Amino acid sequence: MGADLDLVVLGAGSGGLAAAKRAARHGARVAIVEGDRVGGTCVIRGCVPKKLLVYGAQARHQLADASAYGLEIGSVRLDVPDLLRRVRAEVDRLNALHLGFLEKAGVQLISGWGRFTAADRIGISDQRGGPVLEELSAPRFLVAVGGRPARPEIPGVEHTWVSDDMFLLEDVPSAVVVVGAGFIACEFACILRGLGVAVTQVVRGPRLLRGFDAELADAVLDGMREQGIEVLLEQTVVAVEGELGALTARLGNGESLACGGVLMATGRRPWLADLGLDAAGVATENGRIRVDANSCTSVPHIHAVGDVTDRVNLTPVAIDEGRAFADSVFGSRQRQVNHDLVASAVFSDPELATVGLSEEQAIERYGVESVVVHRARFRSMARALPASGPRCLLKLVVEKATDRVLGCHMVGEHAAEIIQMAAIAVGMGATKADFDRTMALHPSVSEEFVTML
Image (cartoon, rainbow, N blue to C red; front, side):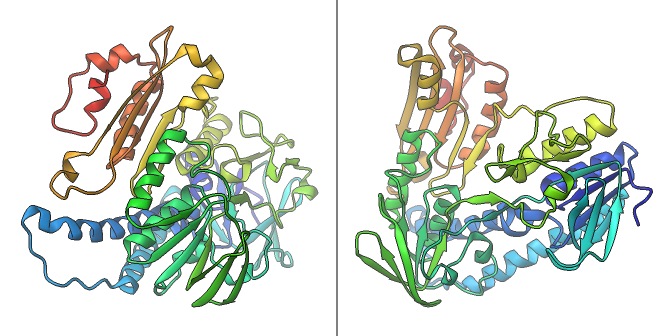
């Protein structure tokens, strides 16, 4: 089987799908192997269903603000099970679309779990790590199996959820403990709170969103606390007792939290198990597949893209890595992905989005005397009549000697939409003077980027 293939892709997530379709467009004969649903983390259990739940939570906030605009609304019944069903139905629709896209592109979909049995062969099983039922061979292979949520090793952790589980729930309990400080923890804490759940977020360190600009992370924390999320900093959950629906999370300080569910949003790891990497001679380090700037592994004809390489673990990055691989290998157009300037967002409430260097990163790279920070902090017009809700924070980090904008950051409504456009300017090397010369679009939140002193 597969004797006439040019490329076998392991994993039908964002990176694998992008690579397979692009390679087929270049004329390659491609098979993609997937034991789960086509679409990967983003479509099936990540970005897409999560953003739909974000919109659901926001709708409840908008109804609460309606009276400030002269709208008198009677009793509103929140049907979370119906929302969850609708989200899953949309995921089903997208899954079917991706199946159709593969067929249209001429990519052969092989249902099953793939692993290397040798450097030039992939074995297919009907369950992960199961006996090999058939083998594929090809001159090129691409590993794009993504990552999986990680749980800490504590007593009772088997009673907890990871992020994947949240999209399978039929309903949500009245109280949930969220463990973690990263974007997944913050996003689900805000989603659950927006759906009427009492949320306590337990954070091991002294702040949220490590790796993001600290001032922006603090602004998100303030907004989360304002909407009623209890955030416990410098605390850990050391054990979980009881059963789902009636759990107790034990903290390291001896206190306990009663709840209906515990979400362990404590990070994700590349999914290397049962890939047969040793059989193929593919080197790993620190729990990831090691690749060079061309996404090539230690074996020249085997490449890897996306979260399994643990570079910049974002869907658009995986897609571009997959396309760059296909263009370079099958399209005679050598190109590499620039991982240095990647916009990112946290769909918390308030929303955070950023591109370029944080204030801390800029100071570390250029020195405190060489960096100028411009900021604006205010309550947006959308919050004027309700007279409540989080304040916006807009921030430009500028290199003093060149006036070049090193980082553009925002916390507030539509932050991701605004920063997406700002990323173009920052990527082109825009200066603060370029921002200043741009006429403001008034009244808008984003105008502050071109009017701040």
